[in-house]
Length: 326
Length: 163
Image 1 (cartoon, rainbow over the protein chains, first blue to last red):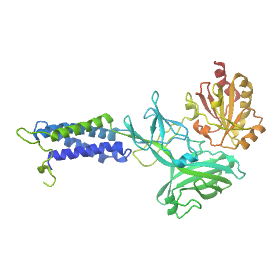
Image 2 (image 1 turned 135 degrees about the vertical axis):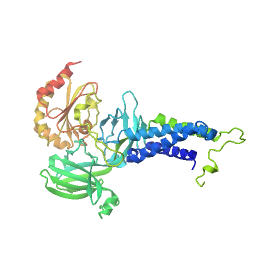
Image 3 (image 1 turned 60 degrees about the vertical axis):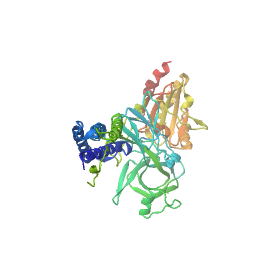
Image 4 (image 1 turned 120 degrees about the vertical axis):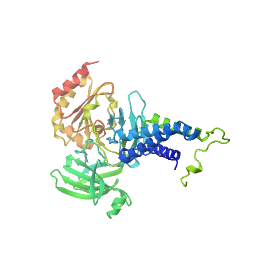
């Protein structure tokens, strides 16, 4: 393979790797040594080729390709710096109906109020507000904001309605969570069962002296454990373990979403659904990345029409000699 | 106020904005329509233009019970000067909250927030929580925990004095 083909192949690879940070953000791999090494290798090879080609040793096309390499090097450098020194991925879990500051971006994130219907529907939108600017709605599609890309991920959530044995509505608290008085469980913890992690959360009903541990089981999880839910086949369910204030177990049951269950003197209705979390991942500097790609494409096009002295036809960018088969 | 990191996606670090209701000072005060003991509905927004003291409480909460007499005294002393006191029960039924109010001689309006929207939106990290809203509809102070009458007076007195 000729140096020109090698450089072009690595340029395309480096551009692809860099753009991937925007298109498929928040992957561990972008901060790993393999990713960094690949981009560094591509940059070194491209610099080597461009340095040699700029004096015409690879013809007129090579001289023009040196410009293309400069563009690809800029893009790859943006990707390398983002992977190497860009901020870690941050997941912001906001309590429904609250405004959560996001210092990394200098914005406030508004997490919409949630009720059983909205959780079941699963609206993925989180609204960002910055002083002096209009609101920016973030969804599941990555949105570049400064040197970051932001998107939402839907995570399991549950809305809890509790009544005592006499039908009195009970306050739901979450003593272990920052959202102390929200009846919406966001399953911030995990519990391992048979080598699999299940979303887990807890809540309490202080008036009834009960503490509940809730595991979120998807429909597939329930099927794997050979548990069907009466009246809610192929649906997710919540495994509820109830204890009293002293920690004594008072009952265990599985609740289908939206259907009341009675356990340990509590009448509980758990509506399962999803609620967005905000994910902030590092991204390449957009101006450098896009500018580099534009320069690469334009210079490649220019090189494709390069005409050597005395040649009647344009010099092909890749010749038969460059084919991998040769 | 909160946050956490899940597994999956990029290197992680925790984000913890644990500040409670105090961090809301200066923020626009959100309002929800909820039932009012005695019938009808009420909301913070209905009292815009007044100094409003919202107290989030529940009948099972011992410090809330201890604080009630001070709130009642505050209400009786300052309602003529334009102070609105709203006791907003969190997560219980109107019957439960109403019975408690009658038993304890509470005369200020008791609202029933069955879905706990007020307390969760105002970042309550416990009960009772008190939020004081200015005439302009912005939060002046968020206070975690039970207060004495003197503390309530000190909080609302300067606001009522300012025109």
